[in-house]
Length: 174
Ligand SMILES: [Zn+2]
Ligand SMILES: [Zn+2]
Image: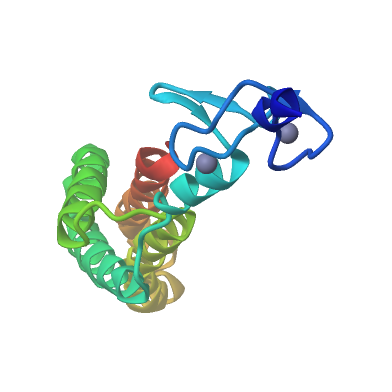
């Protein structure tokens, strides 16, 4: 009888005997339920509640991320006249946006943040391209390809959009 009371059974599998306990909540757990963490064995429940901590963003964090990313991406896109150096501006703006947002929302994180920031970085770089189309197309229509010098800045604008979007995305990927 006393032996029976000393035998632990897994809290998730009542039929399985075990010697292990979760080192956080002390529930007995079988080896299949146990996850080895740097601090010891954890039960599935504790692992789950631990993972929730990684999704820590509040809804307004997404708004902050949107405003900061949008502003930086838009300002950066104004430098498309720099030609090749636009690519460096795009990288710099991408790093700056991620750094500034992380600082502003105190490093809170969530998978949604990556999506919000990548899409915002992309969308905020579009007004420059739209402005190009609106201002340059009438010239091209009137003067033909002689006015296509404007294509130069369009190409760098597009490159900027691609670089800043993928830069932000890959920074937040991990
Ligand atoms: Zn536990
Ligand atoms: Zn179990």
